Image 1 (cartoon, rainbow, N blue to C red):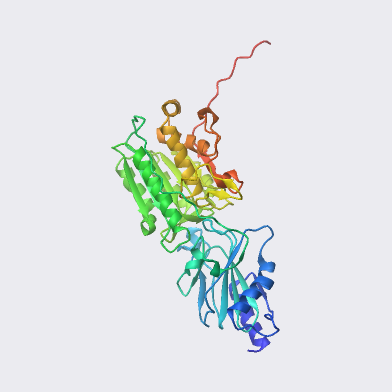
Image 2 (image 1 turned 90 degrees about the horizontal axis):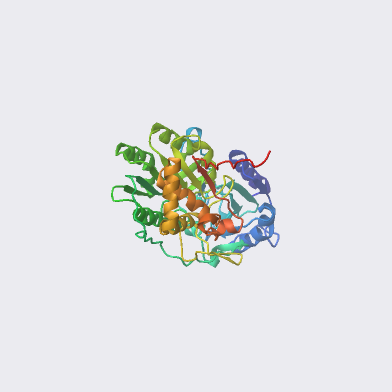
Length: 430
């Protein structure tokens, strides 16, 4: 293929798809490269130094062989109308000649969405780089190594992060120490990932942790419903069902991939506005909302103006990513290495357990609930938020259980509907 023909192919892809960068180059030896080894060297020596932002954690992965002409590369983005669902249309391209494909993950080992890059090297030379926010599909299938949090070394071209395997097990809870008088509540526990998605195993453990805790916590008259994978897309309908059954309050606990003002449930895109609309429909029902997705802090501004939303908690700020279980970050060891599931949710649940199983703390939760006229579960979750971050000194909870927050990677977000009023002290003297 002539240089002019190759340039025409490259420019047509750039114009059609808005690729982030495009540059022609000759692979090592001065001749167009024809094998994976040469392509790997070209990526390491030429492409990555150009496209990786400074001070960025990254990992670049490869396919096992070149892709044939006509292969379709596209984001595995959630389904949804970009105009009405708030989700950007997925990016993709059809390669015009046999090419090597590389996946550059700029936040490896964390939940999506987050910045990634697709790198295509045609065998005749040159490369194209496309910015994206989801892992790629190749002809409709996701290569396992691209969603494996700990891929084999043979797939890794280059990277600056080593993610250690965590050792925790599914969390179990014994909350029988304290006798509780809990009203007839609803609990909706949601695991929104499909089995082929990145961090599916961590999300499954996160879901099981939530089921185990709230099953141990709820009264015999309360109802817990678990929604997993494709069932997760029924969450709004399940809220309607629980309201019809006169369950109040309703606590919603979700682990999912997500972006600003939206989350991916069963492969579909749901917006913060949809949750707001649903909760607003049921203004006499109180809601607690816990969200463990990336950018989950963005939901606070959408929901916190509803008077019936009592507690909103999110794993991270709107411009941050959520993390799976972490036991060691840069030599800093987690205080609760025995736990597993997403780092933030496991910390919240463990803190809640420590509160419920302490009679003094639990009595105080009941007292605050009565004083401020909010559900006991809402007060418990609010206290657990502070306890999980080691900032509930009145309860003696000073260990930050969220290692990603402790090491400065995330800033969990919270909202509560009630204010704590402190009586004014009398002025002495004049």
